[in-house]
Length: 409
Picture 1 (tube, rainbow, N blue to C red):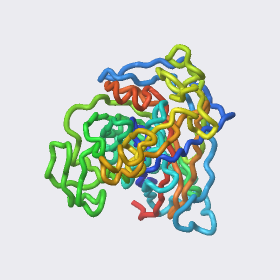
Picture 2 (cartoon, rainbow, N blue to C red):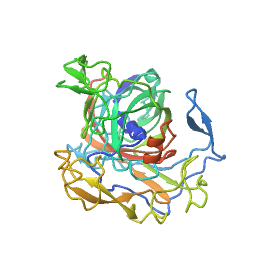
Picture 3 (tube, one colour):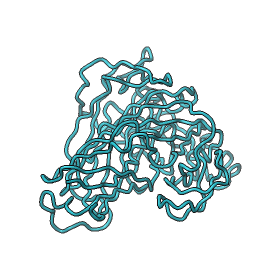
Picture 4 (cartoon, rainbow, N blue to C red):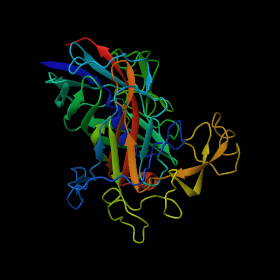
């Protein structure tokens, strides 16, 4: 017997936040010392994709996994009793919708400049749930191969704006527990990165569409796209940069088609300890990913216990945190030049410590859970992106998602 599940894997987009800085730059790092990962068992070595970009084979860090805790973290009250095994899937679909609420956190690259982004929301992807009789279903996402995931992802930080278009390059696989709402999956994407010029509008927008993902093109394409003026349906919503659509793809050629692997994407816990040699001679500490230059961009080379550097201190505009400013400049670099940008705020540089740990949360239908993952990000063909974000380098995410019951197929 087979059931259908709509699983919003927007969490995957986190893997693509090459240089992203969202609406919330407060550090939400969870660098917990003392937790270790299971080594991959072989020496990492980069290979190349047909586009000439490095990807990792055989040596990516393998996260240590622990099970997720059943129950919601927020959202509507759940059932007063836990369903018996199998009941949670019988006669239902499962729809997960990613939110941009508190707890959404995307941290990418080793410099810290592209940390603390908030995920794009309102994207969904459909997979099949098979063999659910025991209460644990097998995830089958083979039909997704070659499809785009969500709308184009707008990112901007350190003066480097990019637009990312995501495509499933392999089938999504994994398991889902019906009664608890816990699950693990493996998601492999190709992320096409477009380097653009407009810091405040990295991706073309779809303006005026009232309902995302309903198949009705009620909006109009604007910005850097060959489809300017054409009708569009919103496929994703950024809390910072507006609504995007696959009807409004960015113009020009990508500066890299990156292989991004979330393995796993889980409601449990992932924990990875840096155990690879850094490329930079004399670098302090170990690195997480093959080809990574340094562990962090802290002046001392050591990330503080609170997940920030003692120095440097960055200046970010309070109202538009994707804009950099001179610390102590007040409104001169922000509001005076860009209305709505606010005041320049001193912001400690985020960083990854020796261990990256993220803990998810299972979600029974009608409640909010959290998906988490660790991943390595290859370099692009654009030095500005690589230098700003710190690529190749690690990424980590925590992504709230709401689950909703639907009818059985």
